[in-house]
Image (cartoon, rainbow, N blue to C red; front, top):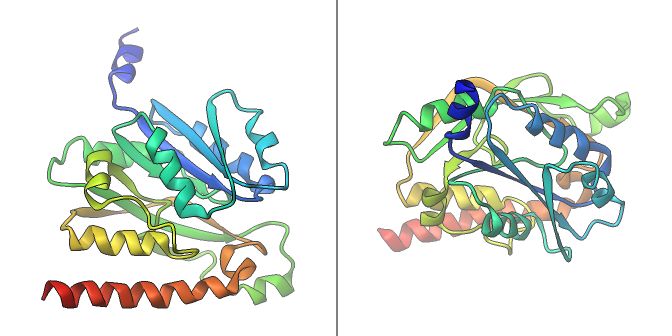
Length: 235
């Protein structure tokens, strides 16, 4: 009974998953959140106009709340989830990626004991999705099986009040909306810590956004330019 009481007193973490036609991987992502050693966790899935039956996967989970929207992009979907989230801590996971079981426990242990920190990241290990053949692996060549610093939306855990100091994701970016948000967060002076542990596994597959929408790469160049413009205005 004492253990249950202590767990109930821990702050709620709201986890937001934007989905768009990702039914093949979505269940694995949700299961990796349900398996977290940290509780309580609220899971909010925002269906960004999927047409492949992704919503049917969510119906299998009583623990998951699903919000529907017309296809508007991941940034808009994440913003929808944030507006309905109940937790004082926010985390995000793409529908094709996975968390390690102690992801939230490691990060919350830091944030609950460090008043000077706004957000915590961790490392990422990429992996080829099992269905890929050798030709496709060469096509989407990446640093598979390597451990990389994870300054990404999927490893972020942040205090809600800190996130709102920066503002919501800019919906105009089809790709790189998190890079844009992170540059704004640094401009605002938010403090962060990168944990040495691997917290997330990033799936490499044939439907990754960079392959599905190669034109979206242009956004990254525009985001860098916008960052430089903001720096010039400040100086």
